[in-house]
Image (cartoon, rainbow, N blue to C red):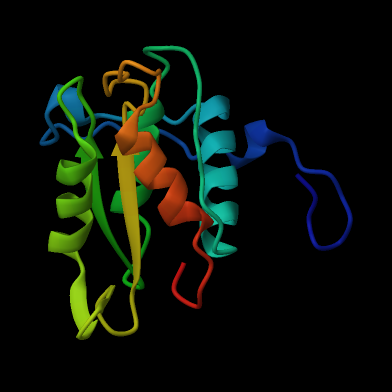
Length: 153
């Protein structure tokens, strides 16, 4: 990472110190690491730039925990909702998930609450079953939503 002065900064210097809180349940503790700091930095930069983010990696490395921690600290300008896919997730169910969380702006236009940006976190994208021809309709729906360019997407 580079400061505004042009000097390089090590990732180690950006890792937040960990302080143990006795009142927080064990499973809610998040210990900041260099990798989680990198991922959060990139996630924040992409989100602040208005880009869609696809976070990939091996199973069990903490992608979901890092994203949920980021969403919890994202700020007042963001509203977020999480959807975990399974083998039974259909494109209809995914569409209903999106539609029920958005507000009606006009007759045929949905959007986030006024002055807010909505973040949809869709977890486990690889889970929906493939059809006979190899398509995964929920993923095709996401692709279509991402490819539509307007002032709200």
